[in-house]
Amino acid sequence: MKMKSLYSVAVAALIFSSCKKDSSGPASVDFQLQATNTVVGLQRSTAASVQWASGTATPASVKFEAKKSTSEIEYTSTANQQVNLFNIAQSTFGNMTLPDGTYSEIELKIQLNGSNANPALQLNGTYNNGTTNTPVTFLVTTPLLVKTESNNVAVSGGTFTAVTALNLNSLMSGISQAAMTNATQTNGTIVISAASNTNLYNIVVANINQFHHTDFNHR
Image (cartoon, rainbow, N blue to C red; front, side):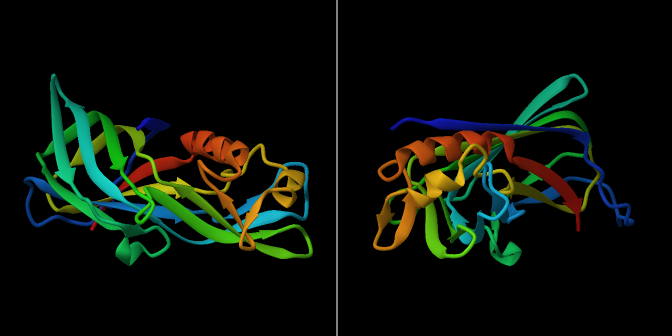
């Protein structure tokens, strides 16, 4: 089964909230996946769009790799659960404890595994050509590796949430209104997958490279 690697770099320093901590020490980090910017315009069209309304992902594990001072550390947390990308309360999939310190470089790797029954990634929405709505589904059943990078992240005890945002705003970049209008439909739905409308599928998968970033927020 071919692995697809999805890369995105968030180079800005991440700023934690300034609320007072009772004491310093190891920090507990929960991981989340969340869809953002869910209305997507199409190429060479001012009227046509796709609006994503629901979706899931199935993280199998998350790996935290970082440099702190002169040392390098690596932690892994298993998940093996499906999360709701459109409901932040149902988007948590793993947890790990990190030592105090300032991490000069962080790489987060989220392994998504899937099957036909529980896809690695699925998005459901509506394609509007300006006048008519058509259901659309984007479906990935093969493994995906979501990677983000961050610099200068300070950890000093407490509890944090690492939210990886899947920015859907440019998901359909390079896809025209004509391509969507002429797409093959399955029972009235435009299914974009490795087995259906594969030309569109390959474009969308390539576009995911640009979308995700991770913010670390103190709770």
